[in-house]
Image (tube, helix red, strand yellow):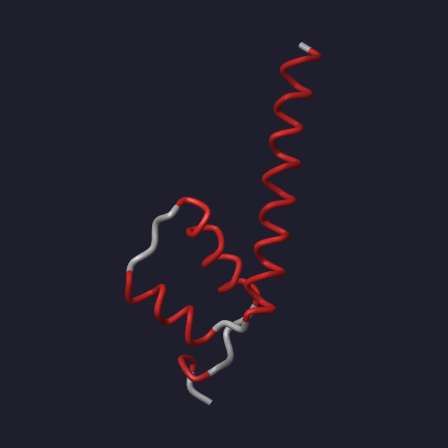
Length: 67
């Protein structure tokens, strides 16, 4: 199987969600993600990304409050 014919993995879904958090994505890449990624992959990557973002915010607040 050629590289571009493989089913996209979690890292591609995570990358798509990461750039979606910033609102920066080229149209062609967004369309390719919409065709290749399953909704479950995007939902799971979004939940993981949101959890990491919240944990990072909590860590920053804790470091600022305790200093």
